[in-house]
Image (cartoon, rainbow, N blue to C red; front, top):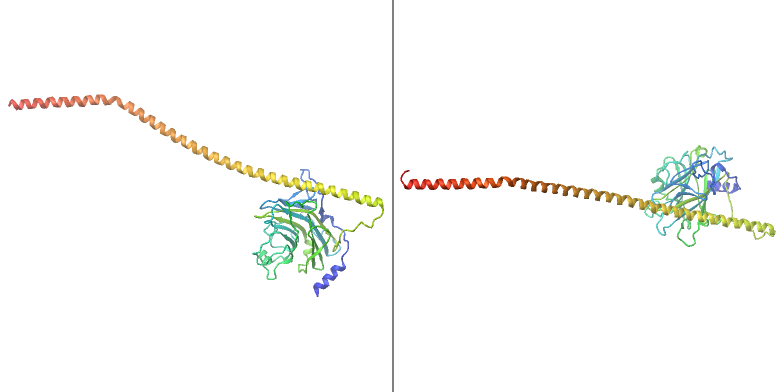
Length: 393
């Protein structure tokens, strides 16, 4: 009954709320620092492997072991919202070259953390106060809590990551197709390949809707009440994180829009009823401008992909070069060692030969002496025998 009451209150509050600039951003990203670094805005920080381009913020490239984040500097309390309610519309693009294996995902956080804290929870710490939406592109069938393409998580500051992932109630959220795009597909284009998630909060009631192909049509995903400390709303900040592990994907954020009230938008309005020629021409001009902007965005996406691929190739070549240099150095040491051994062998051989030559000078006198002594001994023995025969001895 309580959930139904909250839902009716939420539905009654569906209005066009004003966007909160200090807690929102969207393309194009024109702000550049004095150092020449493009930034999200003065109201947001970013870091890790995140890079800001003109038409998107790239949290991770399509490479392994990458982490990136964007985090608001201002809290919901500092934004002075008229009520304790808001809506967030996140426009993003998850794409990659992998056709079967890819991951890990992107997450939206509304927590009391004043700044980003790195961790293993999709690039965020596992213990926090608040809630988050995780777009999980890696299907882990072995996880006891099961898998949801879009997962809603809530923590009162006491739960560990295992408490949430292995909850007896299973994971909360929904499954959705087309939340991830194959970048090698012939139909892929950056400007036409986006997804949206909408989070609405009012009276401790959370409602999540998804628009996987950015068509303008929202589909229900999940809704529930949350129990959080009374002060969490005034202290809450908005954050985005994305990670890759042994598998990879490109995680781009195009816009994060926070509205003062529960925000609802339907499908794009039809212009078929417009009869005024000038107005129809104006619409055509706007459409041409939109197509031109899409072409520029597609070019930037392709340029960044080529730049990242080139950087990755250069990095691998440098690693290979370092390996080759190490092997050459080891070979030189081995060759130098062999040369030293050969030099020692040659030196010893030369010394031996010199010794043999120098030692040849005393052999001849020694032989003569021995022969002389032998001849003298023979002569003496002969005389001795003659004297014995003559009876003188």
